[in-house]
Image 1 (cartoon, one colour):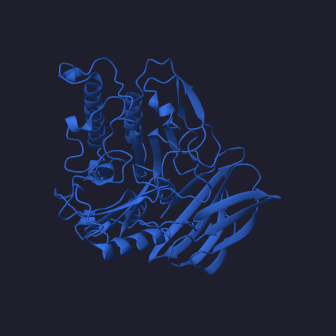
Image 2 (cartoon, rainbow, N blue to C red):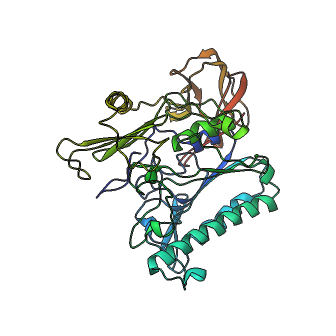
Image 3 (cartoon, rainbow, N blue to C red):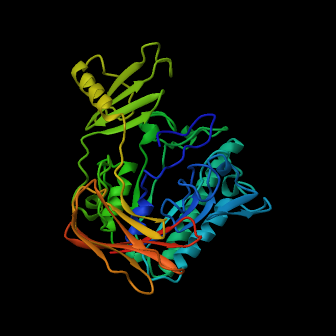
Length: 441
């Protein structure tokens, strides 16, 4: 997703997309998205819904505009609207539901995507701004500070729930933001020094808009600060790596598991940010190039290109594009080569009920072959498995099985990949939608 659409509905995910929740669900995790989703239409049983995109449990807002309502008249629980009276503060409901999910009686590992809408414009809080109410600031800034403090309280509650449930030692918490500080509806981030030495803020491709902290916490991690950059698109391969699930191919992201374990950061050759028709940026080592579209941000009819040396000028205050034409030209060419079609490889296990048969298809969307593959159906009696020696990257195998009469239908794939055994399962009960994708490995 490049950006929020302007003047229209939020773009939807499609069957071609793959989320980190789907990958961890394949690895046997129970999964939840609590808070703001932000993809696709406000309706169940469609390809962009969280339940279809790998989350067993969903509670919150589906769309961006709805998420601006802090005291909503309804929220979504899976495929159902939960009617509210407009008196309940949604972030508080999210915290309660997240703690319940952590405390659920289950032996499965879990993935909790806590997508809170704090802090965000409008800066709405219940009651007054608490300790900030008497500060000599505007009302918007006082409420924004109170939102940030409330987020701190929510995170503390989740960590406390992990400790109380005896799960903290086995849990990794990742805390980050999708953009730099905002200055909407009267909030002034410079009052709080929210972007530190970095230029600009939310929606900009200068460092103040895209460089944010990533806090990784677990009792077993050694406290330290790492300055080698990682990117949000590194999360999917990292979580797949941690869950020991075959990592999908054709990704821009790299696993930063080694950064957590002390083995070293991922070696990105370059990082790219693209806001179509507005601005683009590319970073290669110390060099950062920013390119503005024609007529955008005073760029003029030909656009504008700027170059910065982040090792000497992290605040991007001195444009040296004219002084370093070779670097500028190289980064322009690399930026052009990096932006374009982004093909996906189908990945995972799919089922289709047709003509009295269950057609089971296993897609190898990874970069390594899957060998000793067995496909079958689990049920009261497991069907005889169909075996193939190998499914190469980018290919698939489909097998039809007689549909069991009534009861639960579960497609299963056993295979070897990367020296490990894996089991994918996809279960479907007649009349249920969406189907549930689960696995043990």
